[in-house]
Length: 147
Image (cartoon, rainbow, N blue to C red; front, side, top):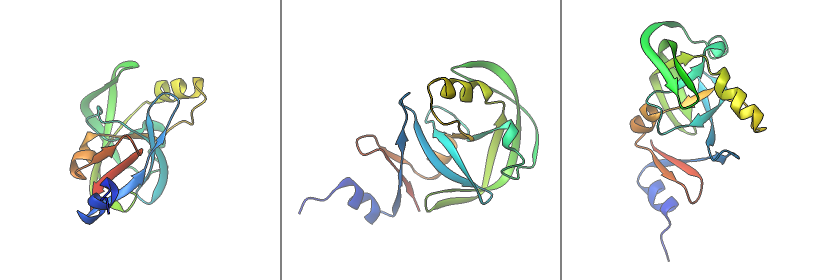
């Protein structure tokens, strides 16, 4: 019997999360912040997990001004806030103490809407991917995080 990647990773203690590929070749993923469901882009190039500044109340984020500036491929540097000690869950994987950067993501959602792609609440970044010892299976559109 041939052993699959999925079976092997499950045996190693990983959980599997389905990824939805968009028309822009981004992956969207559902995640829960402070017990509130949201839709996020999975971005290996983003150093931090982020939410849209306008979503702070939705996700019960208590934030403070940050000295860090945010930038993306579609916009210039901008002011940010940071919220510490948040619960974050992706599939069965969770973190009880996660920092989240907040910034104006209107330019990102505008670009998604122009391509008729559902707007997102934020970005799951490399900080979470590293914490979860992430493995991305691009062939099967799955994210694996170590429990």
